[in-house]
Length: 147
Image (cartoon, rainbow, N blue to C red; front, side, top):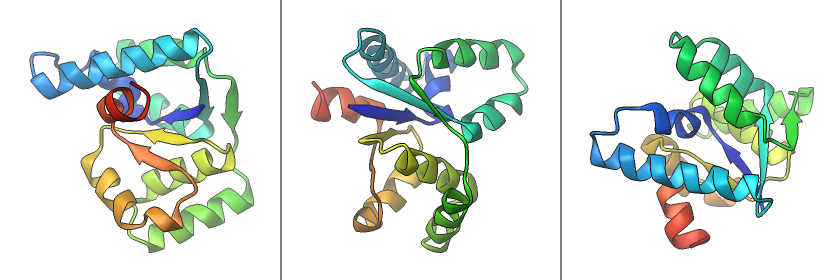
């Protein structure tokens, strides 16, 4: 199974884990990364992920996320078609950065786009038929999709 974890998911293990939701999602991300490390799933990264990490002010967190991404099997570099797809997704109501991530996940033929962003998940549910990738929360992925 091909997975695209957005930066908010990749950051979750390094967030404030005294918050129950953060701790549960962090555990789920760690499980997902473990499954990728054990070749059960394939992780896809992208130029957009790289850009977002480069903009992170917390340099230690950014390096930890970069380290996680070293297990990615594929790396998407945006094409003109991907940019056009992201514009179409923005027109549906997705935020620009989210649309770019989704376009990358679709270009890489990912099965799941994993995010902790509730607004992104809600928008994806509203436009499920327009997407070529399923959008899920990491906790939902490990408990419902791939228990």
